[in-house]
Image (cartoon, rainbow, N blue to C red):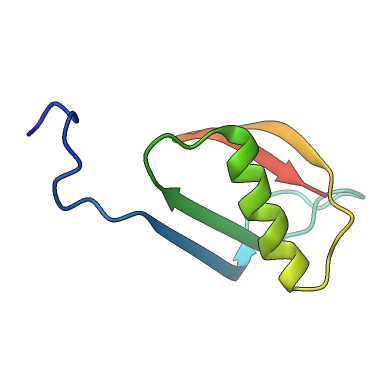
Length: 85
């Protein structure tokens, strides 16, 4: 049904993208015109922010990075948004 009360054909999914990004901004000591960015989309019913952080942590762990810090961030059209260091 259209009210979200039934799962119907919904299938949970996880997608990640790693790519080079360019931005048209003035260069300074903390901002470069080119950098790499990782984005993820997780679609599932009943997820919490803690579970999302766990998924992201596992993603980075598999890439050999285990010391992560999460920082809340505002990015238009995404909620919640975090920066990861």
